[in-house]
Image (cartoon, rainbow, N blue to C red; front, side, top):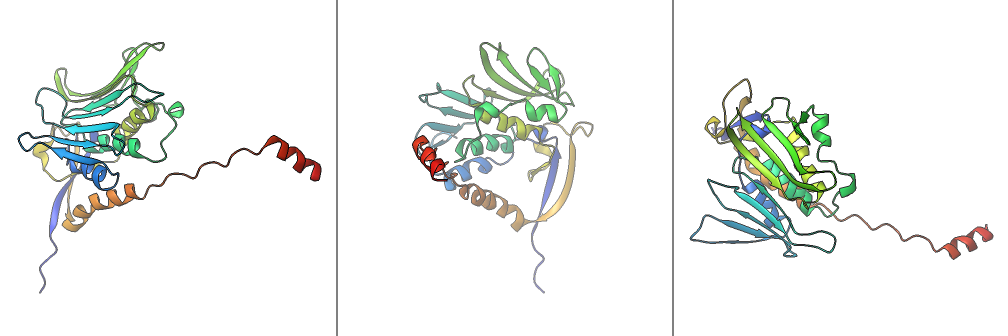
Length: 258
């Protein structure tokens, strides 16, 4: 009799901002395999570095108990100064991946049409401070510093109680709005995220705040999820360019011919 298929215990966690960090490979492996980023590391330091094919973006993961663990820097371009984004250790990888997926998308969204607050408002987030929104459970806050005339950096902060900060994400003032919107859209998503590292990795087990549903899943399905994500990203394609506008003289001649 063949052995029973191996299964893995999976936790499905909501809200996702309190699910813990998750597996960094969800971010790093697709960047390397599907998006052409190159990697480097330091055998003497617990550090991973990834750079984009055009060498304009650099992502590094460096455990730092006193500061952000993930940092993304992008060089200046003709239409935009240099910018950065950083993420604390417990920032769910699904949220960070939303940013890197948007950054590497061959057909990026138009910044002018992106409102980082839009998905949050639709999800029932309420006004907070001078220019921010708070989640319905009052554990997550998104705000932009500065003024409408001189906007500054974005801060996304998740807390438990008054003083216990769980994680924080920061986006520099010049970060493309569609990348901030990608993050906040993933943050507002009500779908649970899965974790395999057990309840000990959760920032809280308070059942009035976090919902944890546990089930057994075939191990092969869990292992294939990252591969499927890589295939999906690799399959993205650059949209065909719009046809050039017709020459006015040609249109006029065509009209006379008709």
